[in-house]
Length: 474
Image (tube, rainbow, N blue to C red; front, top):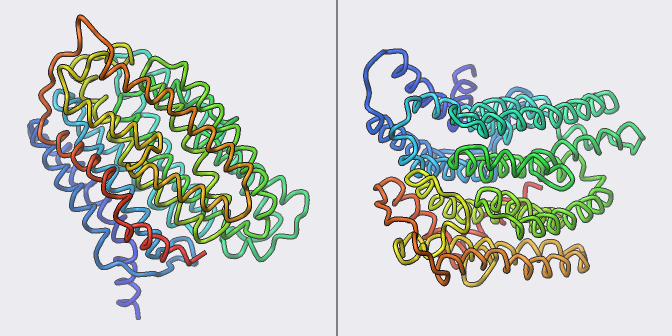
């Protein structure tokens, strides 16, 4: 019996064990004192990250450990695979930036620590375990935001993230304590059985939504996002935008659909209001931006508004549409950030006006950036169109036609600021355009993965059908 439990412990947590193994390998390299060249370290880490990604596709099964502290199923494994894929792409993209950096191993130790925390957070069947995973993922993120030690903006970004994250964590912890005080349990399955609509439970629910709102940059909890994105290194900004936000959205769906499913009518109205303000605010502020990292920050805020529409569907389609869209968003956003990362590493240029006539010197990178922006805008036939289509269809399933109309109008508005960048790249003139960039093999592979994902994910219907079939657990 003990042997069987030990095997379960290893099999059910194999993705977490793989990340821990990579952390230990890097730690041993660091303390061994061997003089490893950065290029060799980067190659080794990328190989290990690829193995970590492949590990998630084999030998997994459903199960529960530690009295529901840790649980896993096919949907949870898929969500972790999406995060592993995104982290692998980011690792490939960071080559140009990290190859001359003195703290390469430290960067990956922090990065993988956050990924480990996100894995535990997604697998948490208990709110306390979720909070521990959240803190494990958040604290190293602040250090990553401050990784450009010589830049003042990087330090400011870390400070603002720490302050906002601490406030959000305080709200979450206060809400969790009220949930435990009124229900006597912290397990997601147990909470749903003890909800009676008391004032303290309503307050706890509002505090939890506020905490999640901070983490996903939903309005009015978004004020930290643009400053932190702008001050952080481009690679870290892409991690914030895709991996960090995606992991919290995965958990948010689970908490709403399981622990608070009896409050569905209430949180549907709350999501309606937050979604509208998030889409409108993200779009209006994105129009005004010149810095590409701030632009993508407000773009990501707007995308969260669309995700909340799918979440309001309260159905199997709602869960599937959110997971499917985050997969597409991973390819789209990382495709854009991949090009920006290359340009920033070689020239330090991050403003939209500096990308004028970019096509004349870098046609291939221009097309990668254009396809990524088209996907973020939801223009067919890119995968972003299909992702937003399924989100809107999930929301329409609950009769939220007013919300769908507002979302459609916001999609039209978003075309303006996405096409503004396309215009600068392909149509504007520039006497001193960005020089032709030589793309190293690792970033090139990352861009190929992103572009292929953007083009094919929407057309391969099996991907959505597979995610939809796994979403029956709700």
